[in-house]
Amino acid sequence: MVKNEIELRSTTFRPADSTDERSLGIVVFDVAWWSLTTQTWLPLLQWLAIGLALSLLTLVLVGARLPWAARLLALLLVAIILLAMRHSDMRFVYRLNALNMTLALAVLLALASAIIWRWRPAATPLPVKAWAQQHWPALIGYLVLTAVMLHPLLWQFTTHILGSPGDSFKYVWRMFWFEHALVDLQVSPAFAPHLFYPSGFELARSELTPANTILGLPITWLAGPIVSYNVVMLASFVLTGCTTYLLAHRLGASRPAAWVGGILFAFCLRRYFHASGHLPLMGTQWLALALYGWEGVITRRRTWDGYVSGLGMALTIWTSWYYAPTFVLLMAFYTLVRPGLRQRARLMQSWPAVLLAGSLTTALVLPLLQPYLELSETGADYRHRLLDLLIHSPEPIEFLLPNPFHPLWRDWMLPLFNWKGEHFVALGYSLIVLMLIGLWVGRKRPAVLALGLIIAINLVMALGPRLRLDDGTIIALPAWFVYDHVPVLDGIRVWNRMVIYVVLCGAVLAALALSALPRRFARVGLVLATLLILFEYAATLPMVAPASRLADVWLSEQPGNGAVIEMPNKYGAPNELYTMYTGKPASLVYTTFTPELYYVVVLCARSVPASRIDCPLSALAHPLHSCQ
Image 1 (cartoon, helix red, strand yellow):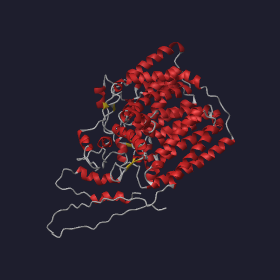
Image 2 (cartoon, one colour):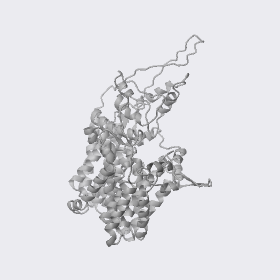
Image 3 (cartoon, helix red, strand yellow):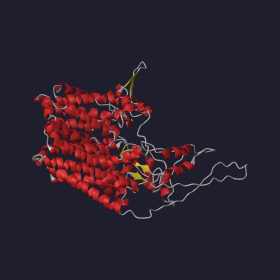
Image 4 (cartoon, helix red, strand yellow):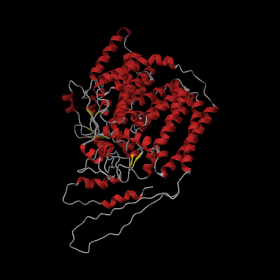
Protein backbone atom coordinates (compact mmCIF):
# COMPACT_ATOMS: atom_id res chain seq x y z
CA MET A 1 0.00 0.00 0.00
CA VAL A 2 1.20 3.52 -0.76
CA LYS A 3 0.26 6.64 1.14
CA ASN A 4 -1.81 9.35 -0.51
CA GLU A 5 0.10 12.52 -1.29
CA ILE A 6 -1.38 15.85 -2.30
CA GLU A 7 0.84 18.60 -3.67
CA LEU A 8 -0.27 22.19 -4.22
CA ARG A 9 1.51 24.29 -6.83
CA SER A 10 1.09 27.93 -7.81
CA THR A 11 2.89 30.22 -10.21
CA THR A 12 4.54 33.28 -8.74
CA PHE A 13 3.15 36.71 -9.69
CA ARG A 14 5.55 39.61 -9.91
CA PRO A 15 4.35 43.18 -10.58
CA ALA A 16 5.50 44.61 -13.92
CA ASP A 17 6.40 47.87 -12.23
CA SER A 18 10.00 47.36 -11.08
CA THR A 19 9.66 50.25 -8.64
CA ASP A 20 7.12 48.32 -6.57
CA GLU A 21 8.88 47.63 -3.28
CA ARG A 22 6.30 45.24 -1.91
CA SER A 23 8.02 42.05 -0.73
CA LEU A 24 5.08 40.22 0.84
CA GLY A 25 3.14 37.76 -1.27
CA ILE A 26 0.21 35.71 -0.02
CA VAL A 27 -1.34 32.66 -1.64
CA VAL A 28 -4.56 31.33 -0.10
CA PHE A 29 -5.82 27.82 -0.74
CA ASP A 30 -9.16 26.35 0.26
CA VAL A 31 -8.78 22.61 -0.26
CA ALA A 32 -10.85 19.58 0.69
CA TRP A 33 -10.71 15.97 -0.41
CA TRP A 34 -12.68 12.80 0.18
CA SER A 35 -12.06 9.11 -0.34
CA LEU A 36 -13.77 7.65 -3.40
CA THR A 37 -15.05 4.67 -1.46
CA THR A 38 -15.84 4.07 2.21
CA GLN A 39 -13.41 1.67 3.87
CA THR A 40 -16.02 -0.52 5.55
CA TRP A 41 -13.72 -3.51 5.87
CA LEU A 42 -11.25 -1.90 8.27
CA PRO A 43 -13.59 -1.26 11.25
CA LEU A 44 -14.86 -4.84 11.08
CA LEU A 45 -11.33 -6.23 11.14
CA GLN A 46 -10.44 -3.87 13.99
CA TRP A 47 -13.30 -5.13 16.15
CA LEU A 48 -12.43 -8.75 15.35
CA ALA A 49 -8.77 -8.20 16.24
CA ILE A 50 -9.63 -6.44 19.51
CA GLY A 51 -12.10 -9.18 20.41
CA LEU A 52 -9.50 -11.85 19.65
CA ALA A 53 -6.85 -10.15 21.79
CA LEU A 54 -9.25 -9.73 24.72
CA SER A 55 -10.40 -13.35 24.45
CA LEU A 56 -6.83 -14.63 24.54
CA LEU A 57 -6.02 -12.37 27.48
CA THR A 58 -9.04 -13.84 29.25
CA LEU A 59 -7.59 -17.31 28.71
CA VAL A 60 -4.31 -16.18 30.26
CA LEU A 61 -6.06 -14.69 33.30
CA VAL A 62 -8.34 -17.69 33.80
CA GLY A 63 -5.39 -20.04 33.41
CA ALA A 64 -3.61 -18.10 36.15
CA ARG A 65 -6.66 -18.73 38.40
CA LEU A 66 -7.26 -15.06 39.13
CA PRO A 67 -10.56 -13.90 40.68
CA TRP A 68 -13.23 -12.54 38.35
CA ALA A 69 -12.87 -8.93 39.58
CA ALA A 70 -9.15 -8.90 38.74
CA ARG A 71 -9.85 -10.37 35.31
CA LEU A 72 -12.54 -7.78 34.61
CA LEU A 73 -10.29 -4.88 35.63
CA ALA A 74 -7.47 -6.04 33.36
CA LEU A 75 -9.79 -6.56 30.39
CA LEU A 76 -11.37 -3.12 30.82
CA LEU A 77 -7.99 -1.39 30.95
CA VAL A 78 -6.70 -3.21 27.86
CA ALA A 79 -9.90 -2.48 25.92
CA ILE A 80 -9.78 1.20 26.87
CA ILE A 81 -6.16 1.74 25.87
CA LEU A 82 -6.66 -0.12 22.57
CA LEU A 83 -9.64 2.04 21.64
CA ALA A 84 -8.15 5.28 22.97
CA MET A 85 -4.93 5.10 20.97
CA ARG A 86 -4.66 4.44 17.24
CA HIS A 87 -7.72 2.22 16.76
CA SER A 88 -9.90 5.35 16.91
CA ASP A 89 -7.48 7.61 15.05
CA MET A 90 -9.07 9.70 12.29
CA ARG A 91 -6.27 8.73 9.86
CA PHE A 92 -6.48 5.49 7.94
CA VAL A 93 -2.82 4.49 7.98
CA TYR A 94 -2.57 4.63 11.78
CA ARG A 95 -5.70 2.55 12.22
CA LEU A 96 -4.19 0.00 9.86
CA ASN A 97 -1.02 -0.03 11.96
CA ALA A 98 -3.15 -0.50 15.07
CA LEU A 99 -4.81 -3.50 13.44
CA ASN A 100 -1.43 -5.09 12.75
CA MET A 101 -0.21 -4.30 16.26
CA THR A 102 -3.30 -5.88 17.82
CA LEU A 103 -2.86 -9.03 15.74
CA ALA A 104 0.77 -9.23 16.90
CA LEU A 105 -0.42 -8.83 20.49
CA ALA A 106 -2.92 -11.63 19.94
CA VAL A 107 -0.11 -13.94 18.80
CA LEU A 108 1.88 -13.20 21.96
CA LEU A 109 -1.16 -13.77 24.18
CA ALA A 110 -1.94 -17.02 22.38
CA LEU A 111 1.56 -18.25 23.14
CA ALA A 112 1.28 -17.17 26.79
CA SER A 113 -2.12 -18.86 27.21
CA ALA A 114 -0.82 -22.10 25.67
CA ILE A 115 2.10 -22.17 28.11
CA ILE A 116 0.09 -21.27 31.18
CA TRP A 117 -2.63 -23.85 30.42
CA ARG A 118 -0.06 -26.55 29.67
CA TRP A 119 1.51 -26.13 33.11
CA ARG A 120 -1.38 -24.52 34.94
CA PRO A 121 -0.42 -23.29 38.43
CA ALA A 122 -2.28 -24.55 41.46
CA ALA A 123 -5.05 -22.41 42.91
CA THR A 124 -4.09 -20.43 46.01
CA PRO A 125 -6.69 -18.85 48.29
CA LEU A 126 -6.73 -15.06 48.53
CA PRO A 127 -7.75 -13.93 52.02
CA VAL A 128 -9.07 -10.61 50.72
CA LYS A 129 -11.36 -9.96 53.69
CA ALA A 130 -8.64 -10.58 56.26
CA TRP A 131 -6.19 -8.47 54.24
CA ALA A 132 -8.65 -5.55 54.08
CA GLN A 133 -9.42 -5.77 57.80
CA GLN A 134 -5.71 -5.63 58.53
CA HIS A 135 -4.87 -2.63 56.36
CA TRP A 136 -7.97 -0.41 56.14
CA PRO A 137 -6.87 1.81 59.08
CA ALA A 138 -3.81 2.84 57.05
CA LEU A 139 -6.03 3.99 54.17
CA ILE A 140 -8.21 6.05 56.51
CA GLY A 141 -5.12 7.56 58.08
CA TYR A 142 -3.74 8.71 54.72
CA LEU A 143 -7.13 10.12 53.71
CA VAL A 144 -7.28 12.22 56.87
CA LEU A 145 -3.65 13.27 56.59
CA THR A 146 -4.06 14.36 52.96
CA ALA A 147 -7.10 16.43 53.88
CA VAL A 148 -5.16 18.12 56.69
CA MET A 149 -1.91 18.73 54.81
CA LEU A 150 -3.61 20.07 51.67
CA HIS A 151 -6.76 21.54 53.21
CA PRO A 152 -6.56 24.94 51.41
CA LEU A 153 -7.25 23.19 48.12
CA LEU A 154 -10.40 21.53 49.49
CA TRP A 155 -12.08 24.91 49.98
CA GLN A 156 -11.52 25.84 46.31
CA PHE A 157 -11.75 22.37 44.84
CA THR A 158 -13.86 23.26 41.81
CA THR A 159 -12.04 26.44 40.77
CA HIS A 160 -8.35 26.15 41.71
CA ILE A 161 -5.50 23.69 41.31
CA LEU A 162 -2.07 23.37 42.90
CA GLY A 163 0.74 25.21 41.16
CA SER A 164 1.03 28.26 38.95
CA PRO A 165 0.21 28.97 35.28
CA GLY A 166 2.39 26.62 33.28
CA ASP A 167 2.52 22.84 33.04
CA SER A 168 -0.48 22.50 35.33
CA PHE A 169 -2.65 24.25 32.72
CA LYS A 170 -1.36 21.89 30.05
CA TYR A 171 -2.53 18.86 32.00
CA VAL A 172 -5.89 20.39 32.84
CA TRP A 173 -6.35 20.72 29.09
CA ARG A 174 -5.28 17.10 28.59
CA MET A 175 -7.90 15.94 31.08
CA PHE A 176 -10.47 17.90 29.07
CA TRP A 177 -9.20 16.76 25.66
CA PHE A 178 -9.21 13.04 26.44
CA GLU A 179 -12.82 13.24 27.58
CA HIS A 180 -13.89 15.48 24.70
CA ALA A 181 -12.15 13.39 22.04
CA LEU A 182 -13.25 9.97 23.31
CA VAL A 183 -16.79 10.79 24.50
CA ASP A 184 -17.93 13.68 22.31
CA LEU A 185 -15.91 13.30 19.10
CA GLN A 186 -15.27 9.54 19.42
CA VAL A 187 -11.76 9.83 17.99
CA SER A 188 -8.33 9.15 19.43
CA PRO A 189 -7.05 11.89 21.75
CA ALA A 190 -3.47 11.06 20.73
CA PHE A 191 -3.82 13.57 17.88
CA ALA A 192 -5.16 17.12 18.26
CA PRO A 193 -5.84 18.59 14.79
CA HIS A 194 -6.54 22.07 16.17
CA LEU A 195 -3.12 22.55 17.82
CA PHE A 196 -0.03 23.61 15.87
CA TYR A 197 -2.63 24.35 13.23
CA PRO A 198 -2.78 23.54 10.35
CA SER A 199 -0.54 20.47 10.67
CA GLY A 200 -2.06 19.22 13.92
CA PHE A 201 -0.31 18.02 17.06
CA GLU A 202 0.78 14.52 17.98
CA LEU A 203 0.48 14.36 21.77
CA ALA A 204 3.23 11.73 21.69
CA ARG A 205 5.62 14.69 21.49
CA SER A 206 4.90 15.01 25.20
CA GLU A 207 3.29 12.91 27.94
CA LEU A 208 0.00 11.18 27.09
CA THR A 209 -0.14 10.03 30.75
CA PRO A 210 -3.21 7.75 30.41
CA ALA A 211 -2.85 6.75 34.06
CA ASN A 212 -4.25 10.22 34.75
CA THR A 213 -6.16 11.25 31.63
CA ILE A 214 -7.92 7.93 30.97
CA LEU A 215 -8.39 6.74 34.56
CA GLY A 216 -9.70 10.20 35.43
CA LEU A 217 -12.03 10.34 32.43
CA PRO A 218 -15.24 9.38 34.30
CA ILE A 219 -14.66 12.21 36.76
CA THR A 220 -13.86 14.62 33.92
CA TRP A 221 -17.14 13.66 32.24
CA LEU A 222 -19.12 14.12 35.46
CA ALA A 223 -17.49 17.20 37.01
CA GLY A 224 -15.12 18.79 34.50
CA PRO A 225 -11.34 18.85 34.05
CA ILE A 226 -10.49 20.99 37.09
CA VAL A 227 -12.23 18.69 39.55
CA SER A 228 -10.82 15.64 37.78
CA TYR A 229 -7.31 17.09 37.93
CA ASN A 230 -7.68 17.74 41.67
CA VAL A 231 -9.08 14.27 42.38
CA VAL A 232 -6.19 12.61 40.56
CA MET A 233 -3.69 14.88 42.31
CA LEU A 234 -5.01 14.26 45.84
CA ALA A 235 -5.52 10.55 45.17
CA SER A 236 -1.82 10.29 44.38
CA PHE A 237 -0.99 11.34 47.96
CA VAL A 238 -3.37 8.81 49.49
CA LEU A 239 -2.42 5.93 47.19
CA THR A 240 1.31 6.62 47.36
CA GLY A 241 1.10 6.40 51.12
CA CYS A 242 -0.90 3.16 50.97
CA THR A 243 1.31 1.35 48.46
CA THR A 244 4.52 2.41 50.22
CA TYR A 245 3.03 1.19 53.50
CA LEU A 246 2.22 -2.19 51.92
CA LEU A 247 5.71 -2.48 50.42
CA ALA A 248 7.46 -1.64 53.70
CA HIS A 249 5.24 -4.07 55.61
CA ARG A 250 5.96 -6.86 53.11
CA LEU A 251 9.70 -6.24 53.56
CA GLY A 252 9.41 -6.72 57.31
CA ALA A 253 8.39 -3.40 58.85
CA SER A 254 5.68 -3.33 61.50
CA ARG A 255 2.38 -1.82 60.40
CA PRO A 256 2.78 1.41 62.45
CA ALA A 257 6.35 1.88 61.22
CA ALA A 258 5.32 1.12 57.64
CA TRP A 259 2.60 3.76 57.94
CA VAL A 260 5.21 6.34 58.90
CA GLY A 261 7.31 5.22 55.93
CA GLY A 262 4.30 5.89 53.71
CA ILE A 263 4.15 9.46 55.02
CA LEU A 264 7.81 10.00 54.15
CA PHE A 265 7.21 9.11 50.51
CA ALA A 266 3.69 10.44 49.95
CA PHE A 267 4.49 13.89 51.36
CA CYS A 268 8.14 14.10 50.40
CA LEU A 269 9.56 17.42 49.24
CA ARG A 270 10.10 16.19 45.69
CA ARG A 271 6.41 15.35 45.32
CA TYR A 272 5.52 18.81 46.61
CA PHE A 273 7.67 20.24 43.83
CA HIS A 274 6.00 18.10 41.15
CA ALA A 275 2.55 19.01 42.52
CA SER A 276 3.12 22.48 41.04
CA GLY A 277 2.32 21.12 37.58
CA HIS A 278 4.13 17.87 36.75
CA LEU A 279 1.01 15.70 36.93
CA PRO A 280 2.56 12.63 35.21
CA LEU A 281 5.36 12.49 37.77
CA MET A 282 2.85 12.47 40.64
CA GLY A 283 1.83 8.86 39.89
CA THR A 284 4.38 7.45 42.32
CA GLN A 285 1.83 5.06 43.83
CA TRP A 286 2.37 2.73 40.88
CA LEU A 287 6.12 2.53 41.55
CA ALA A 288 5.53 1.19 45.04
CA LEU A 289 2.70 -1.08 43.84
CA ALA A 290 4.93 -2.69 41.20
CA LEU A 291 7.71 -3.29 43.74
CA TYR A 292 5.19 -4.64 46.25
CA GLY A 293 3.91 -7.18 43.74
CA TRP A 294 7.40 -8.09 42.51
CA GLU A 295 8.62 -8.69 46.06
CA GLY A 296 5.73 -11.14 46.37
CA VAL A 297 6.79 -12.86 43.13
CA ILE A 298 10.31 -13.31 44.50
CA THR A 299 9.33 -14.54 47.95
CA ARG A 300 5.90 -16.19 47.52
CA ARG A 301 5.89 -17.16 43.82
CA ARG A 302 2.12 -16.70 43.43
CA THR A 303 0.37 -15.66 40.23
CA TRP A 304 -1.61 -13.06 42.17
CA ASP A 305 1.63 -11.24 42.94
CA GLY A 306 2.53 -11.43 39.25
CA TYR A 307 -0.80 -9.80 38.44
CA VAL A 308 -0.22 -6.99 40.95
CA SER A 309 3.33 -6.45 39.72
CA GLY A 310 2.32 -6.43 36.04
CA LEU A 311 -0.53 -4.02 36.71
CA GLY A 312 1.76 -1.75 38.73
CA MET A 313 4.44 -1.80 36.05
CA ALA A 314 1.96 -1.03 33.28
CA LEU A 315 0.42 1.86 35.22
CA THR A 316 3.91 3.18 35.96
CA ILE A 317 4.57 3.32 32.22
CA TRP A 318 1.11 4.81 31.67
CA THR A 319 2.02 7.57 34.12
CA SER A 320 5.22 8.99 32.65
CA TRP A 321 7.89 8.07 30.13
CA TYR A 322 10.45 9.29 32.66
CA TYR A 323 9.52 6.32 34.80
CA ALA A 324 9.06 3.81 31.97
CA PRO A 325 12.68 2.98 31.01
CA THR A 326 14.31 3.90 34.32
CA PHE A 327 11.94 1.89 36.50
CA VAL A 328 12.30 -1.15 34.24
CA LEU A 329 16.05 -1.00 34.88
CA LEU A 330 15.45 -0.51 38.60
CA MET A 331 13.26 -3.62 38.71
CA ALA A 332 15.85 -5.63 36.79
CA PHE A 333 18.59 -4.55 39.20
CA TYR A 334 16.38 -5.32 42.20
CA THR A 335 15.73 -8.80 40.81
CA LEU A 336 19.46 -9.48 40.51
CA VAL A 337 20.41 -8.27 43.99
CA ARG A 338 17.29 -8.84 46.12
CA PRO A 339 17.10 -12.68 46.29
CA GLY A 340 19.54 -14.36 48.63
CA LEU A 341 21.42 -17.45 47.51
CA ARG A 342 18.57 -19.76 48.47
CA GLN A 343 15.83 -17.64 46.90
CA ARG A 344 17.86 -17.08 43.73
CA ALA A 345 18.02 -20.83 43.16
CA ARG A 346 14.23 -21.08 43.55
CA LEU A 347 13.40 -17.98 41.54
CA MET A 348 12.80 -19.99 38.38
CA GLN A 349 9.86 -21.63 40.14
CA SER A 350 8.10 -18.26 39.88
CA TRP A 351 7.79 -18.50 36.07
CA PRO A 352 3.93 -18.57 36.00
CA ALA A 353 3.83 -15.29 37.96
CA VAL A 354 6.55 -13.79 35.75
CA LEU A 355 4.73 -14.87 32.59
CA LEU A 356 1.49 -13.35 33.83
CA ALA A 357 3.21 -10.08 34.78
CA GLY A 358 4.87 -9.86 31.38
CA SER A 359 1.67 -10.68 29.48
CA LEU A 360 -0.37 -8.08 31.34
CA THR A 361 2.30 -5.38 31.01
CA THR A 362 2.70 -6.06 27.27
CA ALA A 363 -1.05 -5.95 26.62
CA LEU A 364 -1.39 -2.61 28.42
CA VAL A 365 1.77 -0.91 27.14
CA LEU A 366 1.97 -1.94 23.47
CA PRO A 367 -1.00 0.23 22.34
CA LEU A 368 0.47 3.23 24.17
CA LEU A 369 3.86 2.64 22.58
CA GLN A 370 2.48 2.76 19.03
CA PRO A 371 2.11 6.58 18.67
CA TYR A 372 5.66 7.12 19.90
CA LEU A 373 7.12 4.55 17.50
CA GLU A 374 5.20 6.01 14.57
CA LEU A 375 6.33 9.52 15.41
CA SER A 376 9.93 8.33 15.58
CA GLU A 377 9.58 6.83 12.11
CA THR A 378 8.63 10.25 10.73
CA GLY A 379 11.95 11.66 11.92
CA ALA A 380 10.87 13.12 15.27
CA ASP A 381 13.88 13.54 17.54
CA TYR A 382 13.40 12.65 21.19
CA ARG A 383 16.84 13.87 22.22
CA HIS A 384 17.54 17.14 23.99
CA ARG A 385 20.57 19.37 23.69
CA LEU A 386 23.31 18.59 26.19
CA LEU A 387 22.96 22.18 27.41
CA ASP A 388 19.39 21.40 28.49
CA LEU A 389 20.68 18.56 30.66
CA LEU A 390 23.35 20.74 32.22
CA ILE A 391 20.85 23.46 33.11
CA HIS A 392 18.97 20.97 35.29
CA SER A 393 22.04 19.41 36.95
CA PRO A 394 22.09 20.05 40.73
CA GLU A 395 25.02 20.51 43.07
CA PRO A 396 25.56 17.93 45.86
CA ILE A 397 24.78 20.51 48.55
CA GLU A 398 21.27 20.89 47.12
CA PHE A 399 20.34 17.43 48.41
CA LEU A 400 20.73 18.82 51.94
CA LEU A 401 18.65 21.99 51.66
CA PRO A 402 15.60 22.34 53.94
CA ASN A 403 11.93 22.38 53.01
CA PRO A 404 11.37 25.60 50.99
CA PHE A 405 7.57 25.33 51.25
CA HIS A 406 7.42 25.44 55.05
CA PRO A 407 5.14 28.25 56.29
CA LEU A 408 7.59 29.25 59.06
CA TRP A 409 10.76 29.69 57.02
CA ARG A 410 9.52 29.72 53.41
CA ASP A 411 10.57 33.32 52.74
CA TRP A 412 14.06 32.70 54.13
CA MET A 413 14.70 29.42 52.34
CA LEU A 414 13.43 30.12 48.82
CA PRO A 415 16.44 32.31 47.89
CA LEU A 416 18.76 29.38 48.71
CA PHE A 417 17.34 27.31 45.87
CA ASN A 418 18.52 27.58 42.28
CA TRP A 419 15.34 28.13 40.26
CA LYS A 420 17.22 28.57 36.96
CA GLY A 421 16.33 25.08 35.91
CA GLU A 422 14.94 22.15 37.85
CA HIS A 423 17.32 21.72 40.78
CA PHE A 424 14.93 20.52 43.46
CA VAL A 425 16.52 17.42 45.00
CA ALA A 426 16.14 18.16 48.73
CA LEU A 427 15.56 14.87 50.56
CA GLY A 428 14.48 16.12 53.98
CA TYR A 429 16.44 15.64 57.19
CA SER A 430 14.03 13.12 58.72
CA LEU A 431 14.35 10.87 55.70
CA ILE A 432 18.15 11.11 55.60
CA VAL A 433 18.59 10.19 59.27
CA LEU A 434 16.09 7.33 59.32
CA MET A 435 17.31 6.01 55.96
CA LEU A 436 20.89 5.77 57.23
CA ILE A 437 19.74 4.03 60.40
CA GLY A 438 17.71 1.58 58.33
CA LEU A 439 20.74 0.79 56.17
CA TRP A 440 22.80 0.03 59.27
CA VAL A 441 20.14 -2.01 61.05
CA GLY A 442 19.40 -4.20 58.03
CA ARG A 443 22.89 -4.28 56.54
CA LYS A 444 22.94 -8.10 56.44
CA ARG A 445 19.63 -8.46 54.60
CA PRO A 446 19.64 -8.84 50.79
CA ALA A 447 16.56 -6.62 50.45
CA VAL A 448 18.26 -3.78 52.34
CA LEU A 449 21.39 -4.23 50.24
CA ALA A 450 19.30 -3.94 47.06
CA LEU A 451 17.57 -0.79 48.31
CA GLY A 452 20.87 0.75 49.38
CA LEU A 453 22.51 0.12 46.01
CA ILE A 454 19.49 1.57 44.19
CA ILE A 455 19.80 4.69 46.36
CA ALA A 456 23.51 5.04 45.61
CA ILE A 457 23.07 4.59 41.85
CA ASN A 458 20.23 7.09 41.61
CA LEU A 459 22.03 9.68 43.72
CA VAL A 460 24.83 9.62 41.16
CA MET A 461 22.45 9.69 38.19
CA ALA A 462 20.48 12.57 39.73
CA LEU A 463 23.61 14.75 39.54
CA GLY A 464 23.27 14.81 35.76
CA PRO A 465 26.01 14.61 33.11
CA ARG A 466 28.80 16.30 35.02
CA LEU A 467 29.95 17.55 38.40
CA ARG A 468 31.74 20.89 38.65
CA LEU A 469 34.07 21.24 41.64
CA ASP A 470 34.86 24.52 43.39
CA ASP A 471 38.23 24.80 41.64
CA GLY A 472 36.56 24.55 38.23
CA THR A 473 37.39 20.89 37.64
CA ILE A 474 34.68 19.06 35.69
CA ILE A 475 34.04 15.36 36.35
CA ALA A 476 32.05 13.48 33.72
CA LEU A 477 29.31 11.34 35.29
CA PRO A 478 27.46 8.24 34.01
CA ALA A 479 24.51 10.29 32.75
CA TRP A 480 26.82 11.80 30.13
CA PHE A 481 27.73 8.35 28.80
CA VAL A 482 24.05 7.39 28.77
CA TYR A 483 23.23 10.55 26.82
CA ASP A 484 25.82 9.71 24.18
CA HIS A 485 25.37 5.95 23.84
CA VAL A 486 22.12 4.53 25.28
CA PRO A 487 18.98 4.73 23.12
CA VAL A 488 15.70 5.74 24.81
CA LEU A 489 17.53 6.89 27.94
CA ASP A 490 19.28 9.52 25.81
CA GLY A 491 15.94 11.37 25.71
CA ILE A 492 15.96 12.14 29.45
CA ARG A 493 16.35 15.87 30.01
CA VAL A 494 16.12 16.14 33.82
CA TRP A 495 18.16 13.39 35.44
CA ASN A 496 17.58 14.74 38.93
CA ARG A 497 14.04 13.36 38.71
CA MET A 498 15.64 10.01 39.57
CA VAL A 499 15.79 11.29 43.13
CA ILE A 500 12.22 9.99 43.50
CA TYR A 501 13.65 6.45 43.59
CA VAL A 502 16.01 7.54 46.36
CA VAL A 503 13.06 8.77 48.41
CA LEU A 504 11.00 5.61 47.78
CA CYS A 505 13.78 3.28 48.89
CA GLY A 506 14.70 5.61 51.72
CA ALA A 507 11.13 5.63 53.02
CA VAL A 508 11.11 1.82 53.16
CA LEU A 509 14.45 1.81 54.98
CA ALA A 510 13.10 4.40 57.41
CA ALA A 511 10.17 2.10 58.19
CA LEU A 512 12.61 -0.75 58.88
CA ALA A 513 14.60 1.55 61.16
CA LEU A 514 11.51 2.49 63.17
CA SER A 515 10.54 -1.18 63.42
CA ALA A 516 13.86 -1.85 65.15
CA LEU A 517 12.98 0.38 68.11
CA PRO A 518 12.96 -1.49 71.45
CA ARG A 519 9.43 -2.56 72.33
CA ARG A 520 9.19 -0.40 75.44
CA PHE A 521 10.10 2.72 73.43
CA ALA A 522 8.33 1.80 70.20
CA ARG A 523 5.04 3.62 70.75
CA VAL A 524 6.60 6.83 72.02
CA GLY A 525 9.30 6.71 69.35
CA LEU A 526 6.79 6.26 66.53
CA VAL A 527 4.64 9.13 67.77
CA LEU A 528 7.63 11.46 68.09
CA ALA A 529 8.95 10.46 64.67
CA THR A 530 5.54 11.06 63.08
CA LEU A 531 5.18 14.49 64.67
CA LEU A 532 8.71 15.47 63.67
CA ILE A 533 8.15 14.36 60.06
CA LEU A 534 4.82 16.17 59.79
CA PHE A 535 6.38 19.34 61.18
CA GLU A 536 9.28 19.19 58.73
CA TYR A 537 6.98 18.42 55.77
CA ALA A 538 4.41 21.11 56.52
CA ALA A 539 3.94 23.15 53.37
CA THR A 540 2.12 26.10 51.91
CA LEU A 541 1.74 25.27 48.23
CA PRO A 542 0.68 27.87 45.64
CA MET A 543 -2.69 27.58 43.92
CA VAL A 544 -4.04 29.02 40.69
CA ALA A 545 -7.42 29.20 38.97
CA PRO A 546 -7.44 27.96 35.36
CA ALA A 547 -9.86 30.38 33.72
CA SER A 548 -10.54 32.21 30.48
CA ARG A 549 -9.22 35.70 29.76
CA LEU A 550 -11.29 38.53 28.31
CA ALA A 551 -9.55 37.93 24.99
CA ASP A 552 -10.64 34.27 25.05
CA VAL A 553 -14.25 35.26 25.64
CA TRP A 554 -14.08 37.74 22.76
CA LEU A 555 -12.50 35.17 20.43
CA SER A 556 -15.17 32.60 21.27
CA GLU A 557 -17.82 35.05 20.06
CA GLN A 558 -16.17 35.67 16.70
CA PRO A 559 -17.47 33.90 13.59
CA GLY A 560 -15.34 31.46 11.65
CA ASN A 561 -12.74 28.97 12.75
CA GLY A 562 -9.47 30.79 12.11
CA ALA A 563 -6.35 29.87 14.06
CA VAL A 564 -5.12 31.98 16.97
CA ILE A 565 -1.53 33.18 17.20
CA GLU A 566 -0.57 35.29 20.22
CA MET A 567 1.84 38.12 19.41
CA PRO A 568 4.27 38.97 20.83
CA ASN A 569 4.79 35.23 21.07
CA LYS A 570 3.87 33.62 24.38
CA TYR A 571 5.11 30.08 23.91
CA GLY A 572 3.79 28.20 26.92
CA ALA A 573 1.49 25.55 28.28
CA PRO A 574 -1.43 27.93 29.01
CA ASN A 575 -2.06 28.29 25.27
CA GLU A 576 -3.47 24.76 25.19
CA LEU A 577 -5.83 25.55 28.04
CA TYR A 578 -7.14 28.69 26.34
CA THR A 579 -8.33 26.67 23.34
CA MET A 580 -10.93 25.20 25.72
CA TYR A 581 -12.46 28.66 26.02
CA THR A 582 -11.94 30.12 22.55
CA GLY A 583 -13.11 27.10 20.58
CA LYS A 584 -10.55 28.11 17.95
CA PRO A 585 -7.43 26.34 16.63
CA ALA A 586 -4.05 27.53 17.88
CA SER A 587 -0.82 27.64 15.91
CA LEU A 588 1.53 27.92 18.89
CA VAL A 589 1.25 25.78 22.02
CA TYR A 590 3.76 24.12 24.32
CA THR A 591 5.25 20.66 23.99
CA THR A 592 8.36 18.90 25.23
CA PHE A 593 9.57 18.02 21.73
CA THR A 594 8.72 20.81 19.31
CA PRO A 595 7.30 20.01 15.84
CA GLU A 596 8.70 21.62 12.71
CA LEU A 597 5.79 24.05 12.27
CA TYR A 598 6.76 25.88 15.44
CA TYR A 599 10.02 27.07 13.93
CA VAL A 600 8.13 28.45 10.92
CA VAL A 601 5.57 30.45 12.87
CA VAL A 602 7.54 31.50 15.92
CA LEU A 603 10.08 33.48 13.89
CA CYS A 604 7.25 35.70 12.72
CA ALA A 605 5.51 35.91 16.08
CA ARG A 606 8.66 36.91 17.93
CA SER A 607 9.38 39.77 15.50
CA VAL A 608 6.01 41.51 15.96
CA PRO A 609 5.73 44.48 16.17
CA ALA A 610 8.39 45.44 13.62
CA SER A 611 8.70 47.67 10.58
CA ARG A 612 9.66 44.72 8.39
CA ILE A 613 8.95 41.01 8.82
CA ASP A 614 10.68 38.34 6.77
CA CYS A 615 8.39 35.38 7.29
CA PRO A 616 8.47 32.24 5.11
CA LEU A 617 4.71 31.86 4.92
CA SER A 618 5.13 29.39 2.08
CA ALA A 619 6.55 26.93 4.58
CA LEU A 620 3.13 26.67 6.21
CA ALA A 621 2.05 24.52 3.28
CA HIS A 622 4.72 21.89 3.89
CA PRO A 623 2.85 20.07 6.69
CA LEU A 624 -0.10 19.62 4.31
CA HIS A 625 2.15 17.84 1.86
CA SER A 626 2.54 14.83 4.16
CA CYS A 627 -1.04 14.57 5.43
CA GLN A 628 -2.39 11.06 5.07
